[in-house]
Image (cartoon, rainbow, N blue to C red; front, top):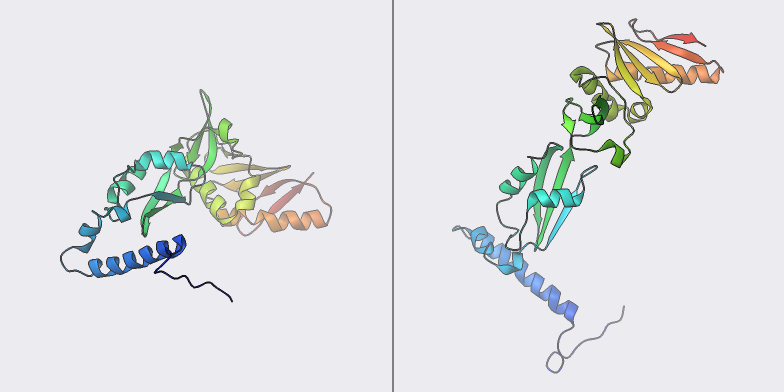
Length: 242
């Protein structure tokens, strides 16, 4: 590896070298000040070197960075050593945020990590459809604008919403196939998949619903067309052929 040695007595240091020298010096200062027993971070909050110049958003799925930055309201006076609790509290006022954390990356970056309450179903309303999460709570998502393809349920049914949330988390490919879930009487559900209906008890779990997949695969290998799969009987999947 070759390089050039600069004569610092007659020429200025390369800009990159000066930059890393300043950063290294700042790291040393941070280590020293942070170790002081009389409140090192309080001193660093008054240093322009640690002023927030960049905010990184991680974990957002449906929320846009501009929405989150609008909630954060980080102004030009913010310092990475400021208490992040008020920023987290602002984020948590958004109904789509399940959890949020903020970390500092020295010298001037805040890393914001969020987990969203993900949409699991569409519910008909006067304007078309509302989007709900796994708690059956409405989310501020426009399904038309985002072109969401979600199961349709008749109302904000907490049990069905919870089932769909479990299905989305554990069996996403099966969740993507569900077009509708509706109650049949008091104790049964009808789940619609492409070209097949699934009947189940109202307390069916995501694990139990997932048992339809190997049955479908077996029927497909045998070139048999199925019209309905019945999960209402314990430890059995009954196939009714077309």
